[in-house]
Length: 94
Image (cartoon, rainbow, N blue to C red; front, side, top):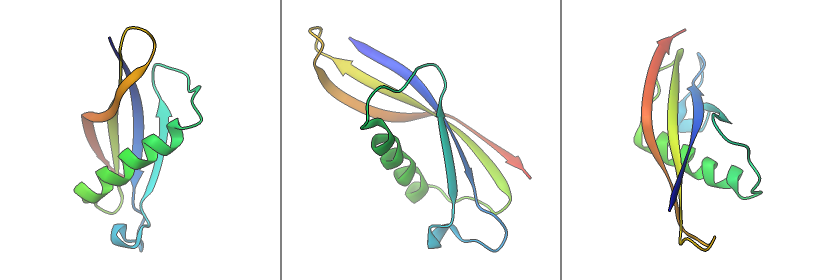
């Protein structure tokens, strides 16, 4: 059984800041679920960091990225896999 939730992440780099200097901001929020796991913020941060490694953010452009958070269970309640996948990206010039 697989559970699929969605997380919206907003990325932005202000004038005078550089993504390569770790000055990109990222704000996330769950779309269709509540967070009960204290490990979840660490997991989404890892997905955010990976997205920033793989993508370049233009200054003064807001990026809205929707991640699917998928949790695979064995049917008895044990988690056997968990991952994030980008399912939507949108850009808006500020």
